Image 1 (cartoon, rainbow, N blue to C red):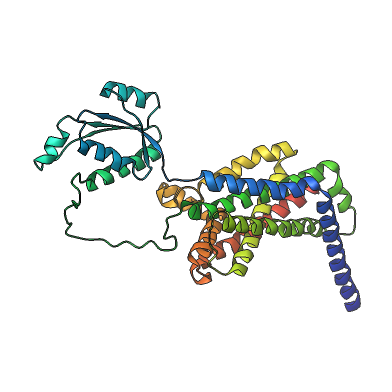
Image 2 (spheres, rainbow, N blue to C red):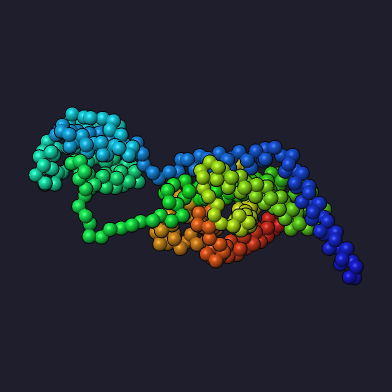
Length: 378
């Protein structure tokens, strides 16, 4: 009996790796799948990395200067010196300025009164009027902050300094001293791209094989159902790890994002997260009958994951309910791991709650997905 059990284990292992070898050969022959694993992640990372930028530059500024003195021209120069604002229009009246802001030709407008120079000369506070297009609330808030800061520091006399404050602040920016916005967004984009690719590739692959009848043929072989599915999952994980390396390489070479933590730990936890994405894809394959349905249904799953993950907007800015709900989002934990390892250089001593969450979610989701798929096939 022991000999029979031994040979059964040997045959099972050899059968499993034979299935894995078959899947790898099949994937390598599928040029469309190889392109899907290389081209979309590269384009998405580059586009999102450059496009997702909260910094504001080259805002069109309209100026109505009733004073026409040196001090008023210095104020305009102060506003446009750092390229945040561009003085692109000089209307003749406030009405014309308001119309240009209303038509969207200008983002902000500045009105300098005739008594501007006289009020400054006597040491009084000079008032100016500012119009800001508030349709884009984010840009409007940033523009207002820039204007307020520049006006507070503005001194028309050469060498004049702002009055000394009772408290002086010395600020040091940790982990990102240059405040480069791409350093914040690129790890989030890597998480988003891996989620989309892992989910869609696994779902489309299984749905396509259901349509062609390949899975039914495999079920007629001596291989168990779990061996068939795991033989399909393992090659996908290995191929998707190539996407992880590609994303990290692009982030380093194109955007200059450092990798300060342990690379082996980063790859290990990334592989763990790929099992989560593949498990979600398998669940999609159980409810969809065609590849088109997979594409459409994926948006109802991946978009909420992205929006509550902190990849684009800070989690702290969300309502309290969604902050708690995001704890069930594996993408939130993976992005926290990426930023911790890439930017802060921390280890498991700081990231263990997020790693533990993935360690629980990955096998749980995989078990549920495989169970649903097996029951559907049977």
